[in-house]
Picture (cartoon, rainbow, N blue to C red):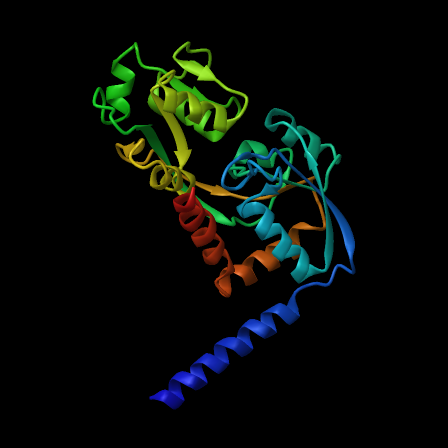
Length: 262
């Protein structure tokens, strides 16, 4: 049995090495990546050090190493990112971007690197409502959202009545600002993908909780100008990282270990 296990492990290692060797070599090509740095733990500015860190930074560093790319980072607001990438101002965009058919009309997406569900976050002592219907029924309750994001559209169309100008949706420039408004009581609900939401709740020491049922499933991908020749090699790197457990290790680091350490 031990010999069989050792042989199986050797085969797995050999397969992983072969997969790495099969990846394209981009010859040190410089790739300009744009992000927002406002969606922890995917990408954000670390307090104290001022460093830009997060799941996506670690993933992109790994992709760059495997494909022999040189990464240069730029910063842009979320509301300008998709248009800027579609116009070729940057080679790649990353900021937890949900893969959607309307966005595919102007940019190309990578293969999904993460699948998540949309969850409802409230303060830990919230008792006025327990699900989306309960929130919608009480006109005094407010929701925080970042315009143009998937949480914003889910809040508008799946929680409320489809009016994007609904005054019950308080708009914030960043996700973090909306989450802080929830913590201090200025709003009563924030929607977030499950990976981030579970991390925030785990780190809140009872200050936050998740209620109700998931409001849908979403997949995240990197974006590129249409017909970019980077899509195929980066997809190959994502597939290799999924196969050898790298993506799962990043999930453990950023959605569990990091959140619990805060």
